[in-house]
Image (tube, one colour):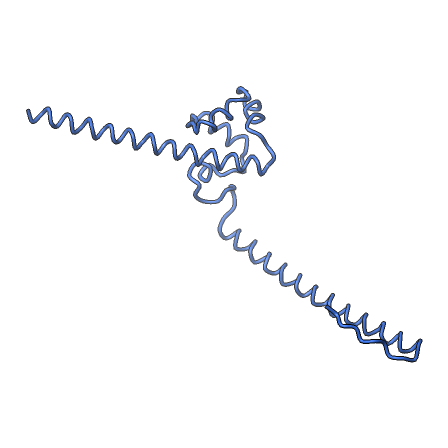
Length: 157
């Protein structure tokens, strides 16, 4: 009798495990397709074009993404070969960098360059504003010289 109870407990546990695995696979598939479709949209590519390029039916990926289907490793490898710049880790898990060859150090260097560019842009705007002020003063002086009267003061916005 004890053996029968154990068997039932094992079957329930296996059933729960299968249910969790199915749900987990669906979640991975959903997030995979969301990431991949966003990437394709960013590039201006379409799932149907990629499918044709791989020798598949144009509706293959559209159907798979619509049903959040899990793709086989052979199709995944073809995707990665078609987009070698795309990181397989990011595509599968959403972790890490989206593109291969980028590192945190590289991003820090890019951020420093962007900060320097922004500082230079602000300096240039400041210089342009100073030059505008000088131009206005020169126009006022020219007006005074030619008319003999000081110009009317105009409030600048």
